[in-house]
Picture 1 (cartoon, helix red, strand yellow):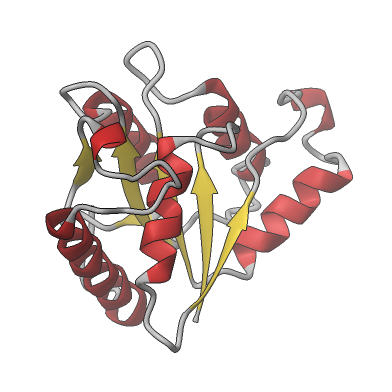
Picture 2 (picture 1 turned 30 degrees about the vertical axis):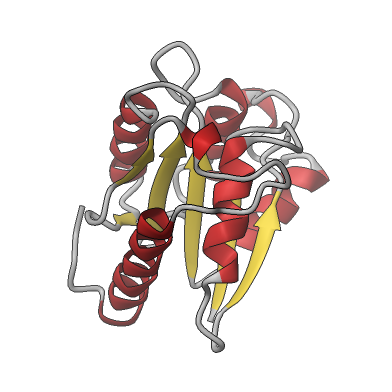
Length: 182
């Protein structure tokens, strides 16, 4: 099984990238994870029929994935522009549906008290519109995320680690059976 990991943050030291790394370290042996960058040129509808090469590669990465995990910060109470831009590019044109039926786990991490809850729900809403199979539970919205990791970015919170294990089980269940819907 191949799982693509997407961070809504481009910052190398981001809490969401640390969350993705912690999640990947808990992957079952039969799962290969690959982090893929969401950095793409700004969406231009005039190019959607013939997108740039990096957009075609991103679509191919998603198309070839058995599941996708998105970890995102919350910027201004919503999804970061770079992540929304990635979703816009990879969901266009409408007849090229790389997100359709794709199992997707959404996670957010934030230094704030809400754990990126609004970005979490906005992201689930957008992915639901694209007919992705969004994993409904557990909902991972890591509040005060900087306290969850040591200075090297290693997860040090056992309860969060257990939650990530539960998320793996849910993602695998949705991926293999397709019986859970968002």
